[in-house]
Length: 300
Image (cartoon, rainbow, N blue to C red; front, side, top):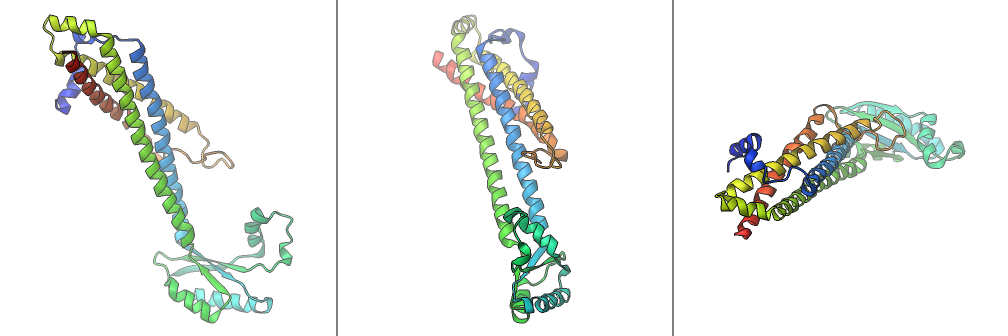
């Protein structure tokens, strides 16, 4: 059976064949409920994957064009080395700008770790220089050698150790989201298969009568396939819409301190969850078709 013929069968239907499958009951509610719940979970898995990817890409982009030079030296040498490092950075190709951070800015960076009451003025805090790179950055190895030679207390940090864990974490979360979606799809197909087998078993007498009057197994299976495919589609549609509404109502990324801020879809990504009902219908179609053919073959 081709895809086009399958779609035509689902859309056209057969009123006489549809009477074989009860329009309501346990199997109908189970199929629709399962499709709705699984689709709801898929929407959240997609949202988590995409939000994580956006966050990691943003952080990686921000860190990839910035560097920090930390200067640790005796107080008598601190100013001299700071001026020398600034001269080196200003004359290095590939660096757009370099700025010596003020004392209050450094205090603000340390305050979340040590608290506001720590006497930072009495501590030997290193000087920090914020470096912004051009699109084609500098030769980091050459810059490190030059700093080591002319300003021994200067250490260049290109934020590589910060970017790599972000990229790795994003890749693993995306893989976890894909695995979750595959498991949810498998669970949906399994539940629909069980529901179809239960419906076939509950209508054994009706099926035997239809066979006595000349109905073919293909005719009987078509009724089950169509009914369960539509149940899976509309159940998944309801679950997907509920999931999208729940994602939309979550706090936005601008809400400070809100839990799971930024979790959701952006722009054209909002159309991706609309594919879930179609995928659920395809799963229901094949799961029911295989289950119906196997169950009817055992009844012979």
